[in-house]
Amino acid sequence: ETGVTQTPRHLVMGMTNKKSLKCEQHLGHNAMYWYKQSAKKPLELMFVYNFKEQTENNSVPSRFSPECPNSSHLFLHLHTLQPEDSALYLCASSPKTGGPGEAFFGQGTRLTVV
Amino acid sequence: GIQVEQSPPDLILQEGANSTLRCNFSDSVNNLQWFHQNPWGQLINLFYIPSGTKQNGRLSATTVATERYSLLYISSSQTTDSGVYFCAVESGYSTLTFGKGTMLLVSP
Image (cartoon, rainbow over all chains, first blue to last red; front, side):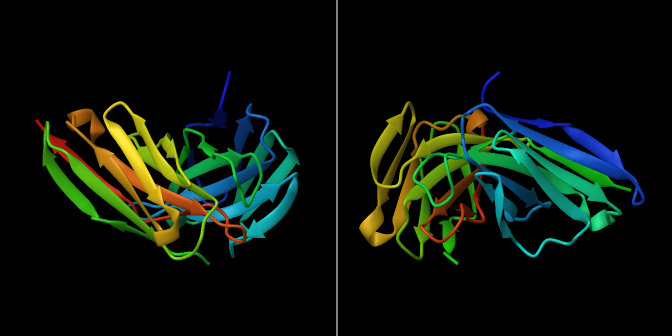
């Protein structure tokens, strides 16, 4: 398998649930990202990891908790979410932050909070 | 942070027509990419083009880094070209930042 893979593709969760999104890249990259795309809005950067270290947290609420155990895997742990957190969550990877190098995205997880 | 502006925001074409999408950015960049977001939400890489010109089939792109803009050309458009086209840039101090996109609809 090549590229960036996200699981699950779709997720419906209640506001009291705890779930995790997973992202895996097979490109040998050292930077990984979480983006959020709400309906009819541009992509918003959430978190950035470079060589397993978090380098950017874009004022994301604490109910979203990222984890990067190694350069190939990135998780987004979700707990006590709100309906307005329903969105498409996209993972990306690139050779390293600050470039140069091409970024690639996973297929996304479409999250619905009920 | 760096600002990215795309135009037009919406575009409707008849099949077979040509179009030009524009991306302006506010500072020098070392990465610039064009993406096509399909109806299922996936971002498809079109071009990695921090400078110069590239072509891939009916699509081509030009980035003039000194003047801080990039253009995406679509020729002989097809209905499958419909979707949202995003420009994204990265500078030495700014992570990959997206414009708001151009929504393209190609009608038969």
